[in-house]
Structures are given as C-alpha cells and as structure tokens.
Image 1 (tube, one colour):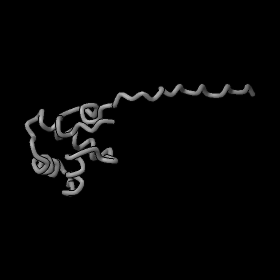
Image 2 (cartoon, rainbow, N blue to C red):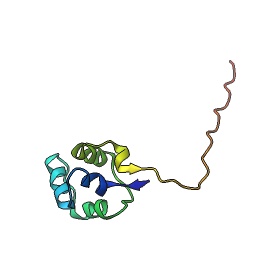
Image 3 (cartoon, rainbow, N blue to C red):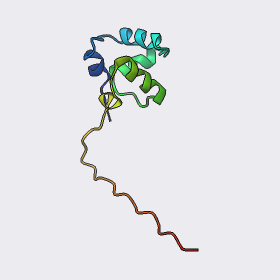
Amino acid sequence: MEWNLRLAAARRGIWTATDLRTRLAAHGLAVSAGKMSKWWSGRPASVKLGDLDALCAVLGCPVDELLIPEQTSRPRLTPVPAPARRAR
C-alpha cells in the first residue's frame, strides 16, 4: 500500500505535521510527536483503524485517498473453493 497522507493533507491546505496534529487533537486524538513524524515523513509500518478513522474525519477524505494499492508484478491469488458439504 502507498501511504498518501501528505498529499491528502496538502489538498486541504494542511502543510505541516504540527497543523495536522493540532487538528487531530481537537478531534480527540492525541498523537505523539514521534508517531506524527512517522505518519508525515514516510510509510508507517502500521496504522490503527481508530487512528485512520480520525485522519479521514479530520481531512474529510475516504480511506482510499490515504491508502492506495501499489501496482506489483505479483500474481493474483485465486480463492480456494470451500469444501463440499456432506449430506447427513
């Protein structure tokens, strides 16, 4: 997945991590400076669903604007059919 926070924030006139952090705090989500730095400057290893929900609420964007699937050369996984049920 591609992490697209800075572009999503910039589209809404939010140019600094401090500004976003302040807005998140006003929304009820206190984010540490370290966590905000990871979110803002790169690709975080993980994001809690509640945090993602707050980011989307503050930015007024859908999740798919923050998390964009990357195109890869990996083959698509084919679903395995469920085993047949035995009659009783």
